Length: 340
Image 1 (tube, rainbow, N blue to C red):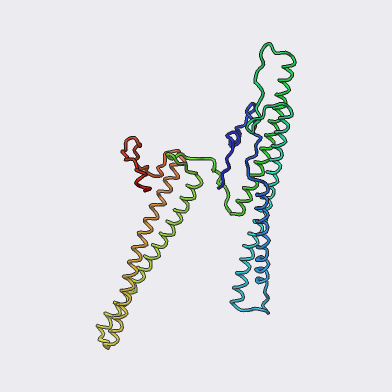
Image 2 (image 1 turned 180 degrees about the horizontal axis):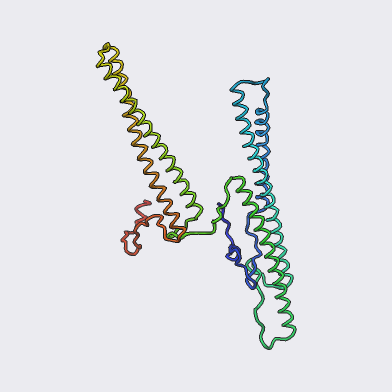
């Protein structure tokens, strides 16, 4: 994320109030740079268009040209790729248009600030440090009518500057929201509805959306690990039944005094199944341990989310003990010895 240095009043959502200094300096990215980036995104969309056409032609291959199972699989895959690439192309086009539109807004914003500064100077307002300063708030009791008229004219000029500044700010913010929306559509990520709700955790802040995603991911991993453990246990149970069955067959063959080669073959079969059962038991124990670990992590994530929603403190990490420098003794470094 790129952070651009801004005045304190500019960084507040609704911080600019009537009577405050009005910022008239442009400190956002140059519109030409933004416009060039938007053009590059749209050129990339044009290149993706070639892939869209290629996948579409492959998906529409006739049975006369290419037939069989391999052909059907190729056409099905090409159809899926065609849909995916078409979606990427459309998102890139929308993103490019949004970036170009944002550059136009920035250009108009810059020109508007320049015009605002020129208007303030032409009306005799004080412009200092890229800010238009308001007139004095009150007049002395012995002020003449001429001074009162000039004071009123200055405040009317300041009011006009203030309203113009608000219009420029609102237009830029609206375009910024449109750009963010286009970026979200392109990335397939949408802002969480609770993005403004923050939970304090010592010196850190944790977003509800992040906690919900973490809890959902941990819960899904726990479910998958539990399913794997159950599948491994079912394998063990099945092998145990098979082992018991071949053991019963071996016992019957011994009692029936079957030929030695048949008894040996059955014993070899029993040994093979027993080895397979031993390996399956090891895998089942490992899968059960993984399931228990994933379940513990899911429970912890769920407790963190519950604590955050209820506003209880949440421990993120333990802070290492630190002693002030005054309590520690350091010997001065002899730079002459170090540097020769």
